Structure formats: structure tokens, C-alpha cells
Image (cartoon, rainbow, N blue to C red; front, side, top):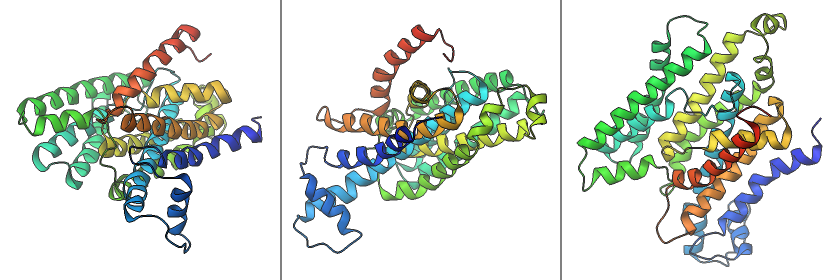
Length: 334
């Protein structure tokens, strides 16, 4: 049984990291002033800070921090759920082509409408369409073999990546192409409360769904006959897991672009801390993923004068770590 202290630490990490992150940036604000600004939104406090300080904390840093934690936790729990469902430690949330589909939708949205609410809706819709295309390729059988689902996802992802390249080829190289390219690399530079209202409920719903299903993921490692003897419908659980992970990934991509490696490596870190039981791996992945992407975003906006795309940093940090894991475990769960 996991210690209560470990659980408490994992749940306290995100809010503590969030409070620390509010003070990180080129515009320095005293930590006590930050706390007062935040508390003033709940209880009446005499204002001892400038309007600029309140604007920076409430309108720029807070929505960005909340989105980073939400997306980081969401992608991590989606990756953990897929790894548990497929019984494969090399699986990530974009295995079924959702990220590529949403990326294509966003590229079309930027090309036609600019970086706007319409673009986000197109990206979200195309991510869901990509999943439908994956199932169409995989076959009409209700109980589709896992390997067919994975192969169909690879085909779908390749197709939508090609379509993204086509949109880039058609885009104006002076104006639209840089916007599409930068957006696809992942960024929270334009994070706002409207982004939270658009994608937040979908990501939260997906996270709650996967959290509720966490103990059933352990049963998926058994044979179908054994699972049915325990009163579990394997097919229904798999469909629900796919639905939850798809909502999270499509919503995350529609808000912040394609952010790689988070959903792949964070579940491994969670297993190193809490073991292989998915009942503990999924909640731990949410907490660690939220803190990890927040850390990456802090680096993104503070390392140099220009903001570094998130996927560059997640790959620079994630790839060597994953190489170490592969060398240590041989690609297995151990």
C-alpha cells in the first residue's frame, strides 16, 4: 500500500509549483505581493501593488500556469491509460493519430482564419475525426484487435502529417507559414482564460473518466475470459479509455499545439515512484505531469529573450531520459 505521505506530497506538488511559477518571469514581483494579489480575488485586501503587477499576475501568468498544469496532467494520464490498455510501455497519447489530426485542423484554421476561437474548434473537431478514421481503417468489428488499432493509428497519423505538410506548402511564406510552424511546435505564449473555458472542461472530463477507470486498467492485462468472470466488459472499458484520452489530447493540441514526450515519459516516472499498479500510476501521472510541463513552460519563457517552443524542450529533456529507461529496462515494464 502506498504511504499516505507520498500521496499527500504528490497532490501538494502542483499547487506549490504553481505558486512558485507565478514569480518566474522577466517582470519581477515580490512573492508576498503575488499572494496578496491572488487572495484579493477572494477576500477584500487593501491594495499595496500596482495595476501593472496585478495585470501580469492575473491576466498573463495565472491562466498560463493553470493551462500548463492542466495539459501536462491530462497528457500524462492519457499516456498512462494507453500504456496500461495496450500493455506497452512505448505507447503515447498520439498513438491513434489524434495529435496529427488536431494539428491539421489547427493548420487549416490558421491558414483560413488566423489564431482564433474558430481555429481551436476546427483543431478539436479534426482530432475527433482522426480517431474515427483510425477505427474506419482498423475495421468494423466491435472487438478490434489491439495490433490493428495501433497500425490504423500509424496510418492515420502519417496521412494527417502529410496533409499538414500540404497546408504548409500552400501557406503564405511571409505571414501564415511561420505562424503554423511555430504553433505546431507547441506554446502557451497566448494562453488566456478563454482557452481555459474552451479546452479546460474537456480535459477535466477526460481526466476524471480515466481516473474512475484506473483500477479496471489492471484487469485489461488479464485474458478476456478472466476479465468477464470479474464482471468487466473489456470492450466497453477500452472504448471509454480511448474516448477519455482522445478528448484530452484533442483539446490540448487545439489550445497549445503538439507537445511531445510528456505522455510517454511521465507514466514511467510515476511507475518508478509508485509501482506498476494503475490505481496509483494514473493519479501520480496527473500530479507529476502537471509539475513537469509547468517546469518546461517556465524554462520556455525565461531561458532566453525569445520564447522557446515547448516540444523542443520536452524532446531535449525527454529523449535522453527515455534512452536511459530503455537501456535500463530493455523496453519492458521493469
